[in-house]
Image (cartoon, rainbow, N blue to C red; front, side):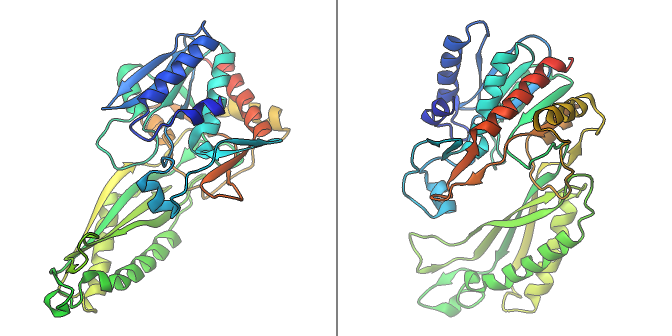
Length: 380
């Protein structure tokens, strides 16, 4: 299954071909199951199937990055092709195993063997700025969601029934454009980009304060990082741009109001810039909510069943966790009233190439057994 997923590239929003290929392969191997492709958006697609009533086993087809694409190179700094999937004893290594081919493969096999429940390997499953419908949204529009769901994704070595929300913040500092051969023609002189350090320094101070105010609600915590800095026109760098743009990803385990957070940050940046050569620039901060933090009751049937399955599989209770900052589609399922638990193997970057992930096949198989058990034991 891992090799099949590797052979079918599924960049976000372009999973349809991979979904149809996967459906055909599954139909040949498990003909007693009615495998379907739910198409959405211009080229999106999700693999779905059902064994009648039961919980939903969820993972996603797309990978956070695509192997060798321009966006991938911007993040990794490496333009070389990522090597093929390899297996060395218990260790499997390859591109996209952590997000999310490893747990997706385990979920698919577990579902086929369970003979119960529902499966959704969704297209467009990772956080991304996009107006396109996600696979989970398309599924929720087309089908009635069950009472409980299991999210098969890599994560910490424990159960998660509480996940943080997330939002994007876009900071824009706007002055006046100019020409590189006449530095004084721009506002500020030399252009706004050369003063990016002033803005970045204040963002670092704000981030420190934001994290320090983390109330550590339940299993979750806060996180914040700058994911992109841009400005100007690479094809014509003799023009000094009028605008500097900085994009942040913000995680909140508590209930944060995005607009209020953006307003607070804008006020801080205006005060800091007023004390610098950026004093004549306009400061604007825009918040774009992704999802709100959400929790399933710790005594919900799906959590209780997952805890028992974990104990029987690994011989101990799942360890407690606080400060978890990974936000997935579990928050979306909970927003629809679906009790949701997340569990899956831990992936780590391969030693020879951090773009590749490493997973233990034995551990992956253990999680497949847990997924299969939950599908058969949880009622609709």
